[in-house]
Length: 298
Image (cartoon, rainbow, N blue to C red; front, top):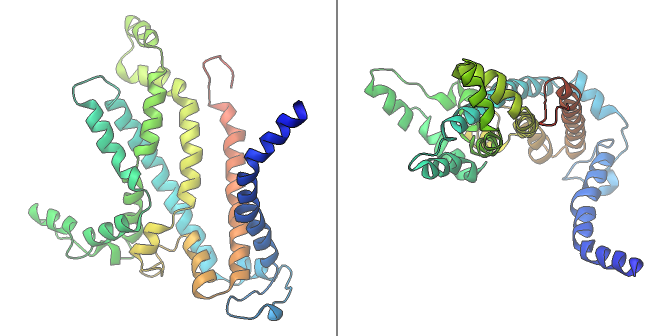
């Protein structure tokens, strides 16, 4: 009976297992092999040569665009992710009160996240922040001289960051769920002891929300490093102007599908995977010092 139940389970799992092997596992292993070759998409397979670690050596020592993409990606993630989480938490605190129409406002704030990293949204964003876009028209009402934001190397990356921060709906919903789990008697006891709103937020809300903050921090950091669509659309796939929006994923795309150096692009991808894995390990290693659960355990 147990063997039959196990067989039935594997039968139901077989579509997922086949998809995992064909769509995820095999392409990943194949890209690992390609990272040690000089594979060119336009060349025939018999021209592929094993080059060993040459792609990785070139990445760290000969490719200036690589380190530029690393700097741009780190700047993007280190600024956009904390601001996005701060915006999500701030709006969640405002919407945590049962007031008339609060459900409508929650839906409206969540709506940008439903659009996700869509091409249409990035196109609208590029038009809005162009030289004759709606944002400059708004500034002109207040007598402020605008500029072509998406075409200015100083501000192009910032426009991409603002688009990412604006889509704070998903972490906001998770913060709202976490706020609902904070016992109200803790706030009542703190009020009786004379604690103000700020002290209640610092000593009750943040510690009780620390597991949720940790969860959002890990997910949004990974998503931040994987940003691609907005930078691709705003820069027309070039990472411009002057490579100011050349995110790491866009550099991988250009190497693999513009320059057709798929072996080198595979090496870039595997280094990227290892880097994100190490960052995640750091989060989980340091989380025990500041993440607190309701049972008192870290």
